[in-house]
Amino acid sequence: MDSAQQLAQFIPDPALAAYVDKLLAQVKQDAELIQQNTVLLQQNTAQILTLTKQIQHAELKNQALVLELAYYRRIRFANKSEQLSPEQRALFDECWAADITAIEAQIGQPDTPNTEDATTAIPKPARPRAGRQPLPDHLPRIIHRHEPASCQCGACGGALIKIGEDISEQLDVEPAQFTVHQHIRPQYACRHCETVAAAPIPAAVIDGGVATSGLLAWVMISKFVDHLPLYRIEHIAQRSQVTLARSTLAEWVGRVGVALQPLVDRLTELLLARSVLHADETPVPQLDPGAGKTKKAYLWAYRTGDLASPSSAPPIVVFDYQPGRQGLHARHFLAGWQGHLMVDDYAGYKALFTQGITELACFAHARRKFFDLHAANQSPIAAAALQRIAALYAIEQAADKLDAAGRLQLRQTQAKPLLGELHDWLIQTRVKVADGSGTARALDYSIKRWPALIRYADSGILPIDNNPVENAIRPIAIGKKNWLFAGSERAGKRAAAIQSLLATAKLNGLEPYAWLKDTLEKLPVWPNSQIDELLPFKNELP
Image (cartoon, rainbow, N blue to C red):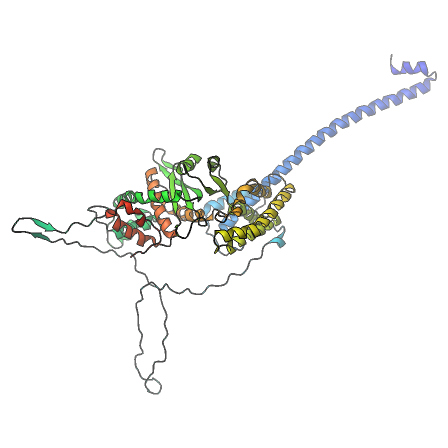
């Protein structure tokens, strides 16, 4: 029975029944339309949520690309230093140009300056112009006296009287000058017993070799301090009509490396006797003959902490060449060592902190995250973080000349309150920042490593950052552009050993060539029990 028949039973008037039936049909139709609209609204809502997520993801990705683009532009066109007032320009590089073009293509808005929050930019103080620096006093002076052509006045003919003199100095240099040391050993015979006597042959690092200790030291300094490949050293010698074949130079490097290895071993022992160390690593290309290309090896650097060392304990840096970046290399080098280790956030070090080693985090790395963010878009959050961190470094600068007790007191009274305020600010700011953004990553880095970051403030001998070892490793990273790759793992280990001695010599204020020449002269006859006297620490050199 349909609705019309049902209505006819209760409503005798056919017209009224038809009208009610029409209303029921209209209500049913409206209900179906409402149901359809509800389904359509749900679908649209789901699409809107999906599009919103896609837009947010695109915005975060675009922001990351903008930050990366700003970083490459700063590296290419501006100063690489992390100071807020860049004053030098970097050289062009085709790889950076390609990266910038690719990122701009992804963003779709090339060459669009970001003027957001330009008022938050930190002012750039003018750098005072430095005058000519005086020439070092230890350099020999060659006197050139210029007297007038006549001792009589050219105007009236009277005698000239000396009233003073004007002295100006010019700096000169002589390129590498080769000399030949000719050793003459007269031989004497005894007529009675028929014996022959002669002076013994002087001991040398390379017995019977043509190179003196000075020439060997020059080759080592040229290769490992000035970062000259052997073929360039060969060409320098050729300009003086001296033939130094690359194969011969390579043999000298190998023999000197073996001779210096006991010094490196002792240097490592002394380094591991310290209670505070810095560690870092840098990739080094190594030739892979079987594959016809290079593979990536790593040079690990370990440096003593300056604040933890008394005045009698000289700074030491030791390089360890390894075929990879696995944490087992650091664990092997530091096996049995206990103390505080300053490192970056590389996961390879994490296992060390479960073996009795205490982690120290680097405030320079935390600051670098905010610096890159500020350099990219003048972020007010990054500017605020940089100012807070700068206050901590100002305290460290004020404590530079203090002893451990004085530094600890200054850190407790001044740095600790600032660290507490900085942590509260990081937490409060992080809540307001979207996940995945560059600002969020910068904040998360400091928040995640906070216990290790502030550990220095409870001691007077712990460093605030890892800059000392980064400064020690930087010359090698620059030198890679000259020598391109290590020829083998053995060559890499030999280079690391020699670099350890020369870098330690520079840390202790020694001129590397003078120290190495003196050491190579003494080493062949030096007793092993007195090997510490040959180490590149501050002492009197001839």
